[in-house]
Amino acid sequence: MPRSITELEKIASQIRRDILRQVHSCSSGHPGGSLGCADFFTALYFHVMEHDKDFKMDGKNEDVFYLSNGHISPVFYSALARSGYFPVDELATFRKINSRLQGHPTTHEGLPGVRVATGSLGQGLSVGIGMALGKKLNNDDKTIYVLTGDGELQEGQIWEAALFAAHNKVDNLIVTVDSNGRQIDGDTDDVMSLGSLEDKWTSFGWEVLHMEGNDMEKVVAGLQTAKQKSGNGKPVIIIMNTEMGFPIDFMMGTHKWHGVAPNDEQLENALGQLEETLGDYKI
Amino acid sequence: MFDDYQVTGKKGTRDGFGAGMAELGRSNDQVVALCADLIGSLKIQKFIEENPKRFFQAGIAEANMMSMSAGLATAGKIPFATTFANFATGRVYDQIRQSIAYSDKNVKICASHAGLTLGEDGATHQILEDIGLMKMLPHMTVINPCDYNQTKEATIAIADHHGPVYLRFGRPGWPIFMPEGSFKIGKAITMKEGSDVTILATGHMVYYAMEATRTLEAKGISVELINIHTIKPLDDEAILKSLTKTKCVVTCEEHQRNGGLGDSVAQLMSMHNPTPQEYIAVNDSFGESGSPAQLLDKYGLGIKDIIAATERVLKRK
Image (cartoon, rainbow over all chains, first blue to last red; front, top):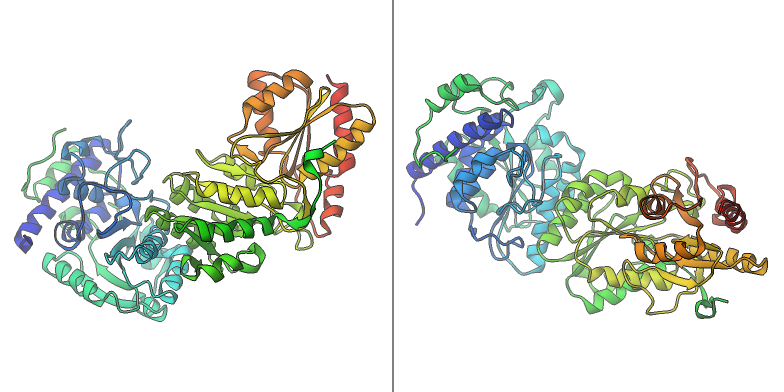
């Protein structure tokens, strides 16, 4: 049964609570980008993707997602846990010793739902292209989804991958760029301006779409449009506008919360702005 | 001497790789190949001709090639990612470390033109650090075959070995002397038994070590020569057994002294059986342009250097 927008918004609210509680508990991690992408992850894992919580590494006959900007692991872990890949209470182990929930996602500890390690930026798109090629060879018609950061596009490997995917008509691939305009050292325009992403990706031969990333209805519609555009000889990229820290009032409008955890007081304040809809995980 | 290792011809180890790939193309439909604009140099034309859909031209973009290989492996394919050794290791170390080794992907990194014997292209392309870089990665298997036959057999063998592998080979025509059917991953090959000194050689240096052995035997020195095609995992048992007998060793490799086969052997000995050792390896230096034979001589990797090192180590027993 497809979920309604209201149901998806409730899941996203819980995922945001999970994000804040994870980073608070270990006093580290990356809440800003995670919060901004919570709607995207919710739409993807609870509405758009055909996927199986009984995890199989090869992803045969299911849609596959790669998180290239691995530092927003809190939102990834929460989406996976809330989808049933592993127990929700395991979120309490995030970044702690002997945990499967490493600071950046990895296959090394066998966490269900993760298919490659990411963290060193710029690699996940290439891995996704490899998986897309593998699916074509296997006559598997499902789709590969990849999320990258916008700051991550400063990595040269991204543009190697962009050339390859267009040249080879890798059209079972939908990439989303989290375009929040901020990175750890400041605004992306100040650190190293990306110019027009639309012009860049269009000139590289991609089908370019735009989407508001913090409006559930628009995220669902945007991903569905992307799905319709796929399979036509071009890889698809969605430039997704988000607000880092959304919707926590004191976390928005700055790059400060890229990689800083809230203290006790800040956590309480932030949680007060988010409805507990599915029950917090136990600590 | 070396009755089982008669020279039957001369071809590049890279030609052995190409022949192995052609055979894999026919025998294993999960094998796919990638190359970064060096098809002719890697000798994989036959594989491509016979399996066009299982080949991916990555262009001059090695980082993307390595990470794509990790994705292909996840989909159940057995990717052979091919380019020059310099571009297959140093240039893409982070991609190999994160996307392949740490992620435990079944990717075969196949690297030609390794070492000084690349020759005239010079030091930019003559990587002498690749064995060290690759053997430091947890669970990476590192193989450095010595001739056409061994490279062909190693290429075929790694397809059936689950896990990341670094297969290193070279450019020049080189004597062929290994009998078919002699290669097994991780199993050193004792080519000649002896009692005075052990020579452990890898890659192209195995042939030079054979030639040195002939001269040393003529001088009355009994040499045990072992072909170490697999540097990781090292065949500890074979090496320690030989050293118990000979009590001294010379290691020979076309690589830096730091981080290569010699260091692996020194580590093994320091833990189990401290033994005098001499290194035949490049000593903290880059290479330069020249012919393969000239370069091996100039950088202390010549046949005469192996003989001299053996005589030195015997005096240290």
